[in-house]
Image 1 (cartoon, rainbow over the protein chains, first blue to last red):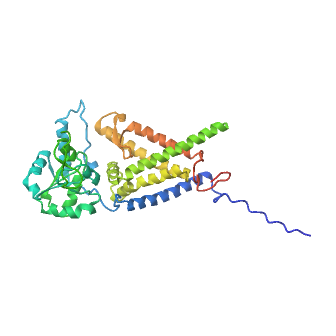
Image 2 (image 1 turned 60 degrees about the horizontal axis):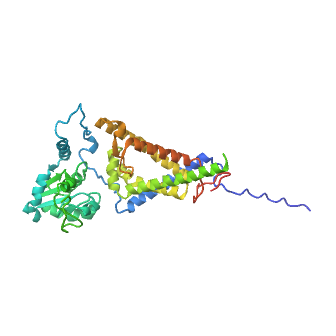
Image 3 (image 1 turned 120 degrees about the horizontal axis):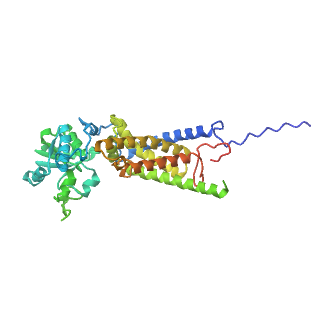
Length: 228
Length: 166
């Protein structure tokens, strides 16, 4: 009897891509990881309530931060012409002016805060920091307006801003440019440029001066003044 | 190399993988949960004037890092993830170095005295410390490519290799 030759069993396939070298497999694996990671990253950014709107220009400035002359620290060869604090203030004021906005100093802001027009809504303060910082403490009566998520507050804040004789916008102060960009956003939304001022010293200077603060929601009452 | 040495290296590699993964998950979350702050830091590098690109980098890079970090922690596609992580770290380190040189020039201070928030999720750091840290992370990521330490991994490789395991 002639036996039928037994078919040779196929070798066990432990390898999906048998001809691929380990290096090629690692590269292919990296490409797959990157592709999935990119998809994941875009999806999370899109779904996150804090995500960025990719098509929005968050820095619609005339001059970008990097276009400004670099800050030079005073050295023995290059002594400061004016006291450092004043020179920093002047630098911030210059930055604000370069965007076509008016700077306002702490004394003026304090004066406006005590001005009866503030209670009448003719002077409006806008806090351009994020929700968490606003809740931790802000100038009493200031409206919250996070420019990265303007859909939350812009519509509600716009009416008092348009009705006010003076709108003061502030953020943290110093290097923070959010107040300037928020002022530009308000200007684009219809608030008159002559009514807009940017407080360059910002919240840091205000709170360091032991001036009144409010925590939580707007008009929720004065918080104990720090350092007193 | 005896068996004990081999096991020690494998164990160290697993520990290194977990460290690298945890580092990327942590630093990614730090940035990803506050993308507006990260956007401002990325803008400092002046990488692009196109707002879409700038927003894309700031909005997605943190989650990209979290994803790669999670793969390393779970032990999935380990070498692909490690190569990707090294691919992020190397250009990023170069960009941070360049920024430090600019700041050094502007401030007239020694290179190692330059301190700034590089957007790495760890706040302000001295540049020399940051560069050493990144060099360590790059070496660790490259070490993962050797394929050691396959324990505690869900799927070490997406593809099996002759003589290898999945």
